[in-house]
Image (cartoon, rainbow, N blue to C red; front, side):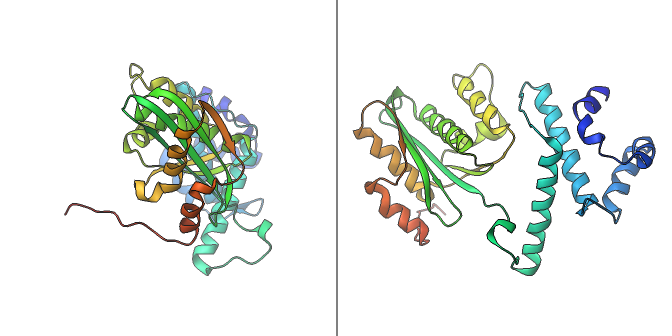
Amino acid sequence: MDYYINQNSNIIDKIPPNRRRAFFEKSLLEWLFDNLRVRSSSGGRSWPTLFSIAIWWAWKWRCGNVFGEQGRCRDRVRFLKDLADETTRSHLLSRDGTISGSRSEQIISWLKLSTDGASHGNPGPATAGGALRGEDGEWLGGFALNIGICSAPLAELWGVYYGLVIAWERGFRRVELEVDSELVVGFLQAGISDTHLLSFLVRLCHGFISRDWLVRVSHVYREANRLADGLANYVFSLDLGFLSLDSCPECVVSIMLEDVNGIGVPRSVRL
């Protein structure tokens, strides 16, 4: 417990001195219930909202330290306050349908990061590609990677890794990562054995995911990931190496426009 308190001392210091005794001397259930049902605010924010977000992230940071995921959060207090503000605004949006004010006052949008990898032979000649898009589907960046010879799961993971690197370096801090490989999504969400051949790259991806940002990893069908799939196939015609794409390549522009306009591709399923 002392270690837990020391690691979050900058957060605990924000508790008003006249409330610290009651805050620390209650039983666990009393502590949780009292802080979650109290009708008070802190700096204009709902205290139950701020409290619940703070204890969840404090536990996540603690687990990261225990399991060797040394993510760094430069200002934990600021980070938690921003999350509480976003949570409050999202509830207002769901209740009222709209939020008044300028764009800068509205909810910070999420970046959509779609990645894919391909291998002709598994193992065989392999590539990866990815697209970064805004909330309206607009192109914000992309990449294409001609890897050489490797397996399909390894190509998928290289796509995820480079996509995360680019998103982080460009300053995005809320990322929706979409991958059409259930195997890779499972590795990213549940982890992987240290003896697995892909563990080194999964750990690199986990290292980025655990940084001071929000990354949601989700599985999508290949039909919903056609843009990243098209980029991965496009790069088979290029030389080995990495290519940053500031604009959408002509060969996949039609796919991007179909995504923007909500035009889907039917998928056959076995009943």
